[in-house]
Image (cartoon, rainbow, N blue to C red; front, side):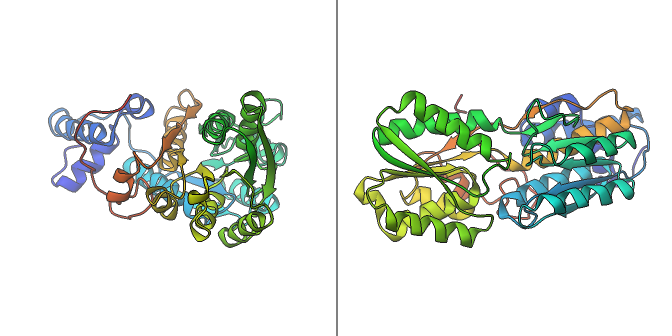
Length: 363
């Protein structure tokens, strides 16, 4: 199909975007170059790897649908669907209510969704709806949180961070920063598989490497306001604590706010956690948090759609593959580009753009 307008050419070229390049970490600038090449090929060769297809509808069930962490995830879903000519629905629970999530999966199955993605935050609750969907010919992918290997869940693939390993690396960082003394580990919703493996990993590292460290796990709750209140109350009752660390986005922001409120960095208390909420980045830059860990939520949406699409277009021959979306420590020395650049890839802008980059790339 030869198009007459740039917009039509871009849409056509998007369908030619090679799956292998996107699945193996091509940069956004690289992806743009592939798209440009695709436009030239479309105009010259009148061929495309993907034939015309239905506007498949992909349903994303989520455990905290309004949490700011998942803003870039939704942008990733939107962008991948726009590239590939598909539609999506964002549904689930606002408060990590597993029953509501299961209900949303069952609604998607009854509505004959073309594919379903769900964070498997409970070890067994999603087994039945996953099996039901697969029996109906609907592929199911896990993103952000995965079922344990022995859970019996038959999801096709997991797209997200290696959660235990990220927690273990955080634990190693805690040992180096604190050395000895009491440490608090904050977790929003214990037992949920998007964050429980992290706190398990951190505890394992502290037990192995931090012989002089005593840690306590504290539940904060599913909303940002609850988390801040619980963290403040903990500090006021444990003012000899040497470190405060969190394994979820809201609790990490709350730790930083408590550090700032009481000037705890001046008392030698260390702090850190996960994810790139805008306030968290500001708190790192101001010296109230030592670090945060990026798990690239945009990719958790984008790559999941890519896998769904490839499964559909190939009749299930291509697509199901676990993808680790990565682990990157952000500290005061590396936070500046995140503060200076507002993009949909980090969820702090809705604007679609190519982000210029210069200079060497750290390995």
